[in-house]
Length: 141
Image (cartoon, rainbow, N blue to C red; front, side, top):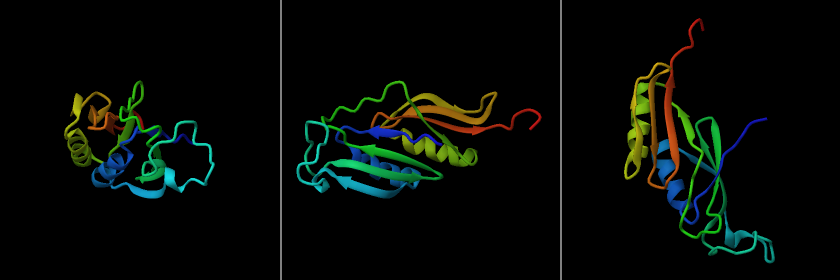
């Protein structure tokens, strides 16, 4: 069993997909727009514009992130959750952190901590919170 995050971008999913392709090297494994749903399909009540993303699956490194425009009201809210990127090394951590921070907001600058050679927290331009980390080896490991 594993956990996959499902992120609702509330109308900005295409923008998110493009950002994560550019910055994280995301590959789109599946993308279905609302116009692709069969006639009469229940899309949860209100139906967003047909060009909006009903469901997509992004491969980012070894993980998959599912995403959608949801009801496409244009006001995504991401509260109480962060996506964590475990970078291969400090250089990759810096590159990812700086790229995701463009037009976003840094909560904790990327720096060394007692548990990581690199650790930082930010919110990207879409409002998604990210933690970037390069963990130090556990004592005795």
